Length: 221
Image (spheres, rainbow, N blue to C red):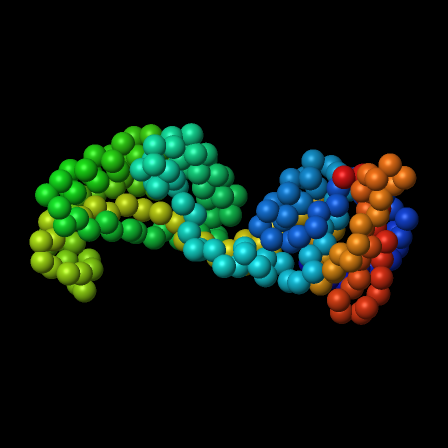
């Protein structure tokens, strides 16, 4: 994927009316771009900086499976998180690696409470889970995390989650968009909106941050 090739498309078709115009090349924008392009829409994405420069590059680097949503009683959101993580694991396994989490317990009820909660999570995860959670004794917990405070430590529970490379995922999404005939362009700042006589937005004014060249982009959506 070469930026100049995407710029050449804009120059070659200056009067083109795009089916979909997306402003912003973070995780959400790139995901929407892949979705639209893969459905056959002529899709253009404009990002004023590099892809995933903003919030998308400041994530926790974790693909949560909804454990915290279960703790809050939000079952539907937990199941949605599990499904989305499963899709990512299926579509981009090279970007992810397993990461174990240990919850230490210092209360007498902590072990049974967390163990029961995680076993419910294991049961609801079914084939979308990453492996069963396990209860750890006090000694096993200390062996895994030697710098824990030992006083009143009762034990712990370990479960699996996933860590991923968010920047690389963004680049892969941009590449996938190009493979589906989409056009993602970075360092292209939107400077204004085009509006029809009735006030409907019909496109944007934009400037290439590298060359200073200006473009007028028309789009249906």
